Image (cartoon, rainbow, N blue to C red):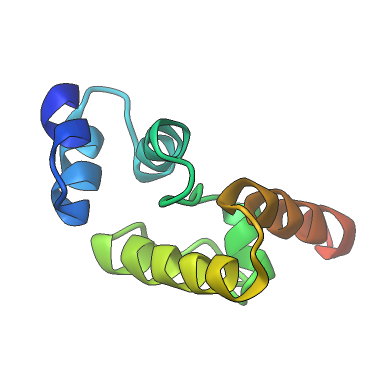
Length: 100
């Protein structure tokens, strides 16, 4: 299955196939994609989602993942920052500002 996910150019197929693997949730699948091709895929994380306006963790769906991926790609293109740098900044912003 991982060969299918990592070998296709279809973004939806990539994430859906990975999420079918036993024990692999949407966030975990996003981590796999990120580290296999970090210039194209951000990490789907509750802290990062909080930083972009989600006050409660939303249900994980393809639509959410795709909108978030497109948003981070746009930020990356506009700023010249890597996906990893944006992921870290969003995570850190939440860590410093989100009330517990």
